[in-house]
Amino acid sequence: MRKFLVAGGIATGAGVGFVALLVVGTYSAAAGLNSGLGAGKSVGLAKGAVPALYQPLVQKWGALCPALNPAMLAAQLYQESGWDPTAKSPADARGIAQFIPGTWATHGIDGNGDGKKNIWDPADAIPSAASYDCELAGYVKNVPGDQSSNMLAAYNAGSYAVIKYGGVPPYKETQGYVKTIRTLEKSFARPTTRVQPSQQAAGAIYYAQQKLGTPYLWGGEGTAEQGGRFDCSGLTQAAYASIGIELPRVANDQYNAGPHPSRGELLPGDLVFFSDDLTNSRAIHHVGLYVGGGYMINAPYTGAVIRFDKIDAPDYFGATRVTKDGAAALPTFKPGT
Image (cartoon, rainbow, N blue to C red):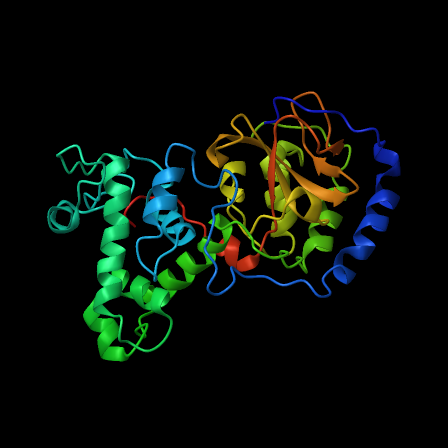
């Protein structure tokens, strides 16, 4: 739910023509833009993607070895626990990095130098996760192929399997894990080039513009029982579902569905987010669908209708350019699974 909003000055009745003009340029804007982290470049973290409490740890320890980078380490931690230091799985995986006690006994380190190795303390668990990754990278350093992907495969399937198969083994689970982390990695990295435009953007906007004037409903997902009403993340979820991309239900999880264009690089179809804490994506409380010109379609709050509003507000956090792979990589936050 949006707690603070600067109201837009565009009437709903004028909306269809306004959106149509903005979306015309969506695909032509794709020309000449590149994506990716950039080989050989140091990888910074996207604004607020890692909670501020953990960002220095992730930035420092994510650079522990050449096969690892801070965004990749962040992707692993997010996939494991959703940044919850108290997470515990049915398999007894514990803490923010979801170590099994037996694995912790062998691979846990005293990351903060206080003389203790505490599986529940992120100051120990995050360095331990990086140390374990780099240990595995050392085991498979002579295996052909991408060093980072081989490291992640060793994390999932064991280093012997990576050595045996000369790279990522042909296990569906392992290949899926590697793809998931490498995809999520892009959502935690600060882009070094322009982010590639979405080819599905116009379809998502078309869906949302059909809902203009619909009353807001907290928890609304547009079902018949709810009278076709939405809340903010219900609307964006439905807009992307209409073009075959399944987003999570909650706004702060939708933030990790792709890379993050800057304010000056926004294109129609980007998701725009607003947060109570501008250093922490987990504090996001509102999301809208950018349509261009500094405006979004959004479901603002109880008593309002789906409408256009300006995005420039004190709580503006950032944006995500949704990708199908990015959305599919998002975890459901069942720790250790």
